[in-house]
Image (cartoon, rainbow, N blue to C red; front, side):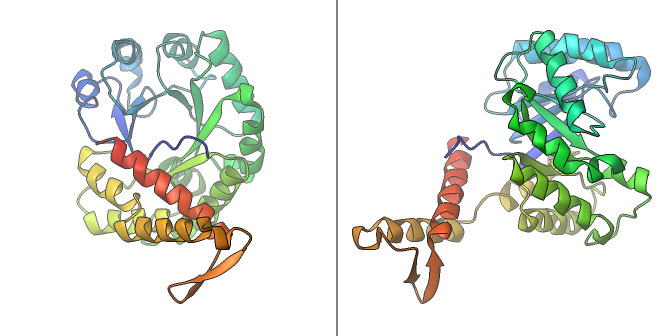
Length: 293
C-alpha cells in the first residue's frame, strides 16, 4: 500500500497576510494552502508572492503539508508565481481553473522548467463547468508521472458562480459534479478534497456537509477558518469502532485456515476479502493520523 498522508483538514491562508503565514505553522491542520489567487487583491499580488516564497523556504511547518495556490498561468501574475514558488520547497502547487488534461501537462512542464523538485506534486482546482465535463480527461493526466498530478480540490464557490447553482442544505444541485469528480479521481489513484463551507456561524451545517463529503468518499475538506479544523479532523478520521472492526477483519483473513477463502462469517456478518483490503486502508489512515501527534 502506498504511503498514506492525511488530508482531513486543508486550510486556506491568504499569502498577503504575514501573520497568517506564521500562524499556519502552529495550527493542527493536516495541510495548508498558502493562497496567491482568490484571497489576494491585485495590488497585493507581488507582496504576497514574495512573502509566501520566503515563508516556504524558511520552513517550520512541521508535519503539515504545504501547498501554494498560484494564479492561473494565463493571468498577469501566473508566470511570476510559478518562477517564485516552484522551487521553494512546497509540497505541491495548486493550479486554478483547470479545464483539461492538457492544462495539467502544461502546468507540470512549467513547474519542471521553474526548478520544482521531482517530489513536488501538482494539485488541481476543479471549479469550472468545463472541468466537470472533462473530469475524466483531467484525471487521466495522472497516468503520466511527469504530470505530477496528485490531488483534486473542489472549488464549489466558483462552480456555483459559473453554473448559478444555489447553496442549499444537502447540496443537491452539486451532488452530480461532486460524485463525477470523485469517480474520475479514484479511477486514476488521485486524492480529492471537498470545497469550503462559507457560513462560519453554522457549526451544524458544517458538520452535516463534512459528514456528507466523508460518506461520499472524499479524503477531507478545504477550510476557510482555523475554527473549522478540529471538527474536520474528527469527522474525516476513522472512529475507534471502525478501526477495531477493520483490525478484526484483517486478523480473520490472516488466519492460516482462511488463507484461501474469499469470504467468511465474522460476528454474524459475511465479509469478503475486499473488506480486509478496505480495512488495511482504514488502519493505515488511523496510524498516519496518530503519528501526527
